[in-house]
Length: 399
Image 1: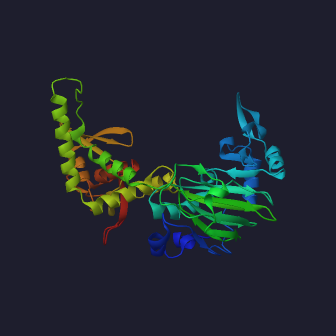
Image 2: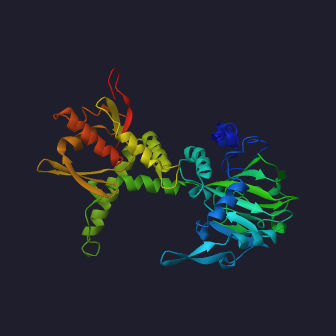
Image 3: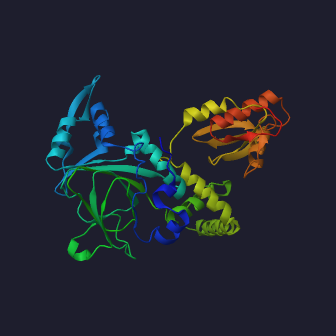
């Protein structure tokens, strides 16, 4: 099974981001030639249909550029005492034989090989990626000229497909849009993709495709752009999560108190922003993006199994999981993490604060002043919540 890197799709990473990313399309002939066996295939799609358990929302059929109502390829089935809609394989095949294009949305949700394919893109763009697969009958146009709101990396899997791609406009139109050939003029790329070819289409770039003399299967890895407004919203949200911004104001007091208080909070936020380390914040935003729901593959069972192997000599560090550390009362400090509230000894809260950054300590010494076994138990408990993670073994120490 091939392990794919981002460079397999785009070539030189630095050249891609300097010359093509968010600027213009990129065609790479044969980039994955001979390396398609581990990717979604027509056989995989047949197997998914045969299961009859994939929700109908994952599949879409279009004919003549228009969507086919889902009732034309679904049926009602009994599952226990409940009735549910299920895909009807034969009706899907019938629509395909009559010229319909079958689109599998979010295939990475149901097919492990598609999920693996998202990982290099999640790493490169620090955000979720999705896989959509298009199966088009021979001699059939796909979608009419349009643009997408996401960056798309096309991989031709089976058959051939002719693509027309126009210039990426300086001013992008809305999230989605369609065009007539007359308003677009001549494409900058007109090419028939063969298995293993890769085509990058930046968001907002008009494009159209049609199958040639045989069935065409291509997949698209889509990456939603993280714009500055998204990143700065994340930055401000992290800053205002601190205790100084938790009070509840009386906005309608009519006496100007709320206005003065708002001015104070805006000034405080400005001070916090001015003191922010841009390099550290960029790293945090990268980590947050890679950890977002839908980014990469969850390996929670494997992670929890690893937690149980933490030993006294294992080095542990903070993760990027947000933790709200409250105030102390009667020797205990409240923690809010991942929807959980727990009270921990003040020394544990202090230890978490001390680990803010790249610092690491052994599990045996994480909770100072208590027996080694208790410190190890507390470290494992916080690791199960995702607050701590292993960072290797201390020199000369057992795990």
